[in-house]
Image (tube, rainbow, N blue to C red; front, side, top):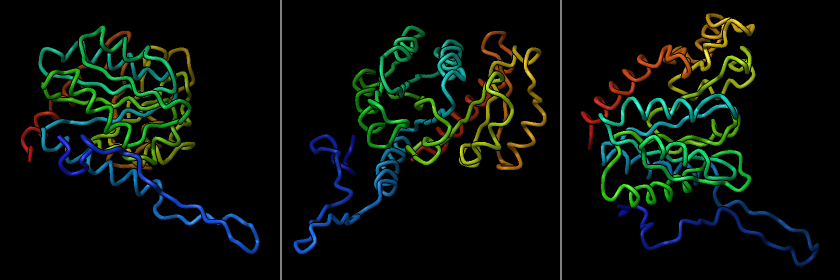
Length: 252
């Protein structure tokens, strides 16, 4: 698959800096060869090229822990698995629990554990996608969901090669997340307000939150959903159907 990067036969680790020790003072000087973000961007573009060549719609889900990303994935897989091949890369610091939940719903899933890092990076996604291809036995996913590590800060700075970035905020988290974490909203294409069934119990002004998010990014597509009651899910499913159709139409 990887004629560009040669990952089938080469290690993906890349030196990003060198250390030199001065003879006369003994001080250590770090000479930066290439920034981590630049290297991440390079691999992300390789990921994007793979996805484009295969006609895969790649979606990066970012949110705080407990916003309902995995539950939304479960509902999405249940609704669309007969229409599309769905693959999932599950990002977490530890455990395989989310990948196990997704597989139980009928989708192929690879768990990406960061061992402490608070976000996914493009090289790990690249390796995870190779593993997913093997798990799918040659089948190509129509939709690849990348569920990022629960965090609204670092994931917004690391492009993974996705076509769509989705930021989720649950009603119990409060209405101030766009103001507190503006980059997550500025870099996303879709904003999903989750756990809408809890609106009667929390001080969460949906229209105010929408307005604040759109002031940061006027192009945001916004959904208000409840995975428990089903509110808003059909609109989300229709959006995905439309995006897959568009992606298939521009396959390179």
